[in-house]
Image 1 (cartoon, rainbow, N blue to C red):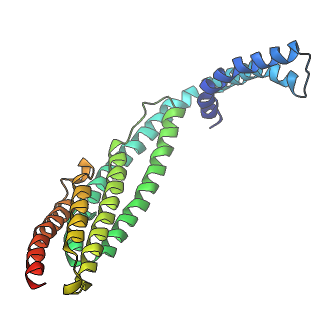
Image 2 (image 1 turned 30 degrees about the vertical axis):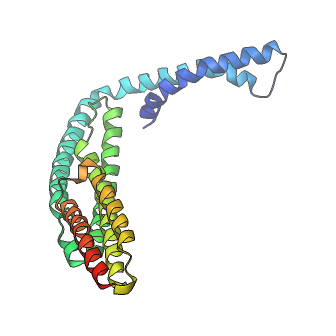
Length: 236
């Protein structure tokens, strides 16, 4: 890991050396000699020595590297298969469907999403470990795009379910309004505002059944409210 750390730090260290040199020159120009000035001046050559030692150590382990790379490659291939199966399960089991929305069992959806979020974090940590090994052994870096897609979809799905719960809570609260207290114009404005918000949700959610269900719920409410308004006007 020391060799890896040197490799990771090389670019950043090169960028800060010139500002260090400029600072030293500026301090000398103004006859300022704070504690640590000598160490600042010596930092660039000392770092060069660290890099040299790092490459020297790397050459020593080179005969073992090919064998270790093969082992790591096999581990990464196995992990890639595990990730493929996980992503397949993720899309089958996560609440992209509307079943829990229809039944009102919202907690089931959130429990499932929380479970897969925790699993995604563990898998991402493992992926990061493999990336570190790839960097250390100069291997081609794996990007694990499928994992990023699962995490992105999970964020979108959670936000969508937040919308489902909010809309249902609003609509259900209207059930408690007494007939002579109904302000249909206000309800219509709210329904249209909700419809606009649902329509403007990210494109990534629009193919999911639960989104289409939510869209239909809002559309149906927007259709029913004008009828309620007509009936309400006739009875008032």
